[in-house]
Length: 92
Image 1 (tube, one colour):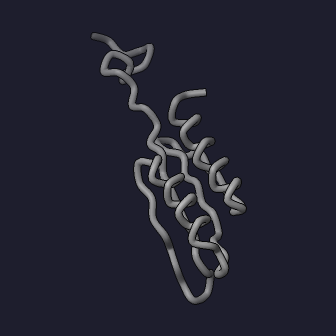
Image 2 (cartoon, one colour):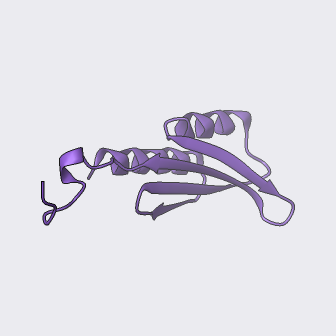
Image 3 (cartoon, one colour):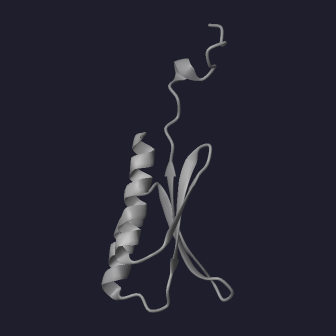
């Protein structure tokens, strides 16, 4: 598993350990992790959740009156080295 996949899996596992249900989605350039945050989350759980998402490249909290609160994090995938960008058919 690439380092970015390991980081995303570790973040999701830490959020799950806090008691949050997580969703992990793979995209071309990044992996996203989302967790619904219940109204009654203790201060210690909040601290642990924020420490977990702080390991990501970006993170935030989306709060709406309709959907509640969603904690999200993004882990960027590695960019290929310059020599690999053109792929196998690339002529130098």
